[in-house]
Image 1 (cartoon, rainbow, N blue to C red):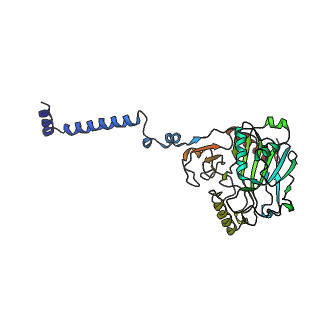
Image 2: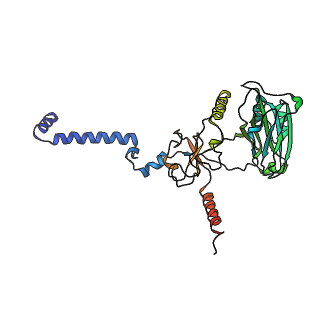
Image 3: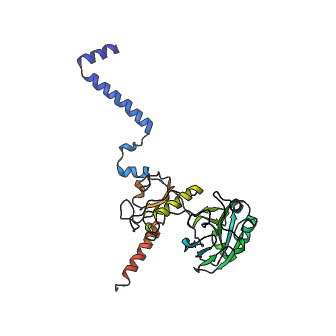
Length: 342
């Protein structure tokens, strides 16, 4: 009976085609709803609805105050035979201890001891962890906010002109910054900083620089301090200050030692505006590439870094919205107060 009905419907009425299309529509709708649920597929949403789905994860950050700072004011003149000048910048009274020719293995074992055994919050604690595996030690007392340059040099009787070929078993110089006052160690989360410094010598002429900086926390963790690649930094040195030949030589030496990292492209601007809209202030750091190049308005549109095209796994803001508003109000007062009368 059903077959006779379908044949009659096919021969005498266009309702057959309508029925087939309707059945196909129902089947397709059932498949779509079964796959996506009651939510609408992303391809059918407008741009405003798609913003939340393309937003990358926001990394939860905890703000801590770092009482230690260390710079190399004259890297071009530093060498193993001539020594090196260091400029500490500390928020409290500190002790700067320099270890020449420190064992690479013993240093990393000492960092692990900070996590699992005892806290390295004094120079003596680090010396106990190193088992005196270094060639020479120098120590300086640094007053609060004192930026006086400290000169470090191996004694002449050490007769050290280089630390051997790469890979090396000793770091040229390790700088340890610790808080001098016991009460300050109870206030700060960061209780010491270890800086691994490369100094050029006869066998390895890579220019002087800080290779690693480790921040040691009172809770037993330590973190490797990484540089952020700003989209444009007015305080950064000009690329023309170093010749292309020197840059390529340093790059090849870093690759040989296994210390090379992907470097950002040369800066073309001197402002700190967002690289996308050129209007908002840069406030977001993208991970893992560490490019700081997007403002609060543009961060929600990107899953890839606009500078290096690497996929963004996480991101975090440099400052909160409240801090930005306070900073903007401060700038407005600074601009208005000198030349206006209220």
